[in-house]
Image (tube, rainbow, N blue to C red):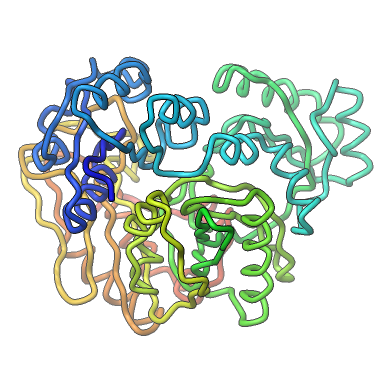
Length: 448
């Protein structure tokens, strides 16, 4: 059992980890930038340490300051949350050097999945379906064009160190390849310091369906079923649900088995997610693995009644997992409430929350770190809350979500609540007829 866990993160995920730690009798340490001094994760931790000014590079990404905070508070473990240093293999390695347990996979496991080309090669060897594409990084423009011609247009250029949709460009015909090639490389270089590019077949109208997995230190890997994450804008997820309305029993069995193969291929330790693209014929392809807890993990928690943060902590302590695969017992859906204006191209809306009323009731969960009077800083991700609803069926879940969104009131800043309200009424969404490009033609209309 850990005595004290430092949470190297901020906001709702830091608060979420603290709650489980408290239930397990583990003390917690919050780290915070000066911009987050009034955040709830700072208030509710047993100890809190300021690690720098607002910019992430000077605080939440500053490894020496985080390690110093762990040392002065005698923390024996660090939970990285998601984002920031959660998938930083060097950070995990440094934790080990200081005899502090990194609550997550090993550095080698993080590295094996952090580079897209290495991950794809590993999956091919493990027998996991992958999208047809170049066998490795493209050396030059000529090779890129030749490979694209062999695969067949449309193709997608991807940064090997990419994430969040950066360094990705769809090319529909050869005449546009060079322009998109340069744009992808420049964006990748600016975002990741690495302009390595590879090419894959572009899957038209794909679903983004991911499988939650867990692996212990004793070689057991299980899956905890799927999440549908196809409602996204510019590769950023806005709504997630489980089970997927596109799923069949046969597809779930095949994808679940592939997800376990993926975890076993790297002897995965911890909680992670295998992300797939699924075409309209229900062919599925490995896309990437996230070696951390996901933003949307509450969706899985609600449909299988399982605390994934507790699972992470127990695995890190060396405990064995059950060896059982989980199937959804309910239907759950999560709407990400962001401080953005959906009527103005989702422009960020930082500022002071004047009043706040979160939704409540049976089957309604809100994960948030904000409150009336809280000032949303402009330096970090704009998500301020996650609204999760659970019901027996998808139809009941959507109805409950509509009611909960009506109750969720935030004054002082713009939020994505109006977008979610409109989406819940959309006939195609309600029928489960959507894909990752669904929002490209979604009309918010004018503000009432």
